[in-house]
Length: 110
Ligand code: SF4
Ligand code: SF4
Image 1 (cartoon, rainbow, N blue to C red):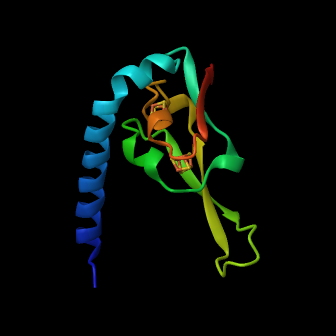
Image 2 (cartoon, rainbow, N blue to C red; image 1 turned 90 degrees about the vertical axis):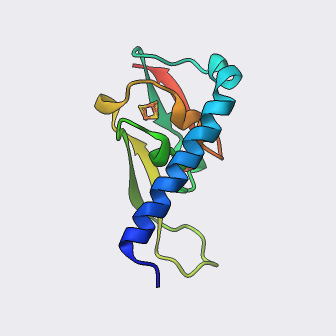
């Protein structure tokens, strides 16, 4: 069985892998997304699948996940998760926008 230490190590390795991949892609994609101190990330809840990618890449701990009731009657799971932005901690760096597989995050003016 996987220990908590192993899980933490794997999570750190995943975060590093994602960070490196994002750094490669960032250039051109980043130019197209507005960002900076005058902006803040915003999660479109309906598009969020709770995959946790955005929290892995956010260096400022500005994203948290919260539980919501699962809407699908065909899956035997009580809760799904959604991401939300902690506005005061968000620096507008845009990394989460680039990491989100469902395009659930956009940058808005503060
Ligand atoms: S824009 Fe940057 S600081 Fe703000 S939530 Fe996204 S990754 Fe975190
Ligand atoms: S990366 Fe996108 S889909 Fe995944 S938890 Fe964050 S906002 Fe939701």
